[in-house]
Figure 1 (cartoon, one colour):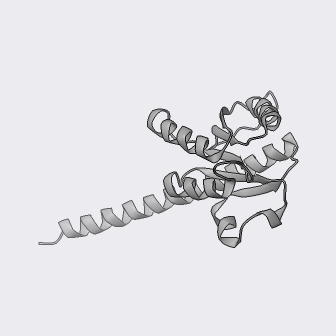
Figure 2: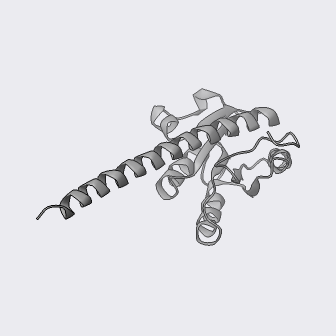
Length: 165
């Protein structure tokens, strides 16, 4: 925590909120801004994917997408699949007003980073984001370790080739 009581997030800074409920988006945005997140919003999956495409070219990708499941045009499940195809480094938190029964099968659960039933309190949202951030940090640490292991292996392999006559 910082001196102002904010939790610091190691890997999540840019958040996209996708929901067609305007008041929910306003409330969530107000609470997340207090934690110094950079926020953008979209009202459905199609608008979210357009925004993600533009952002990838300009400012980089979103670290986290918080999306409702039931929306017009492109729902949250379709959005999740599109994100994992085009922006696999982006974490996805799905929200549903229908409980787990409103979620698709196990394959979808494996793709998303977390989900929660609506309504959700601001503190619960921050707790979920914190847990996703922790998992991302661990995964990035593991990826860095794997890169270091690969580099060591390549250096040893390259070094042993150089020492051959």
